[in-house]
Image (cartoon, rainbow, N blue to C red; front, side, top):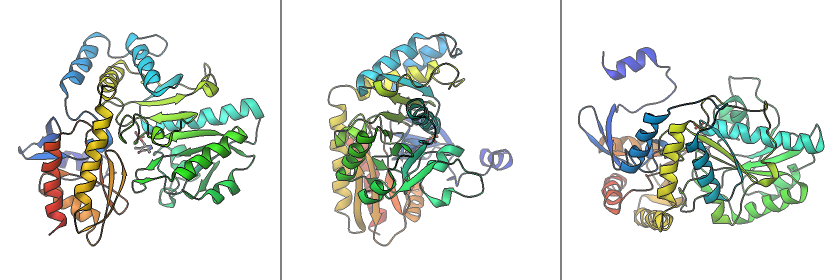
Length: 388
Ligand SMILES: *Cc1c(COP(=O)(O)O)cnc(C)c1O
């Protein structure tokens, strides 16, 4: 039986997959089992931040596999300590909890916010404001947090205590930020919601209103974090640092990881017995993460992400079929005039270019290490399709 038949036979049908059986990746390209090459403008899905099989990353990960691959969190590993120290250093946060995915990092943030408030103010202050069109994950709590009605089906009852506010609507925020609220959770650039950056005035208002009421700000930087927007954290583009920031996708360069980072204010909320994870802080993931931080933190790397993002944006804006280009850095949404994102993505696939979509837009999340030459090769394919 071939690979796709085996999937159909044994794997739950939860994804609309393209008929690509990936065999090997190198730099920003991958090859399927028939030897056909694709340029990857999606990094998997925002994950392969250094592209495929980066030399130093491979070296770090393999060295770790050969020493300790896992130990229980009842013990310590040096690599988890080193990674936490580096991640705190680069972000300015003081404490981290490691999990294995974005949804788990957000679950942790939700638990911290509720317990922070319970410890200080007692019961009844458990609501969390999230934004319309947000995306926070697929577990029951993070689905409940996700501000899109299409996700609130089938799995009743959902987790209580999430209130949706319209993104960029300060009046709506003011009206709903009452004494039952312990946190506001948001993506600075909504990813799945269509690659839409929040207005600076709205972000300012969130911080001002939350600061005045001791309501925590949670930044879901699962997609925007780790250099994606041209700063290590997207919050830096707004001059803001949330009380809690969650990271995942690109953090370990392709190995499952999630991280919930807190400032001094809520670093001691979770105590023994209140949270945990078998795999969280896995040594291999931490070794991969260290290799990512070393590269993303190197001189000029993030400037280069911004320059490459601006270049892609300018080439796309010059294309007649393009209505608008949104996003920041190498997180880019492309609204089209007449074609659908799905059709363009399928045609690109046939022509050896992997794209993502978000709502009605084509979405680009290329590896942060992509070269100008690879960008041009991918854009030539994309623009040719758009201009047909
Ligand atoms: C992808 C994503 C998640 C969910 O991450 P998983 O690793 O799939 O659980 C949560 N929030 C945002 C903003 C994301 O983009």
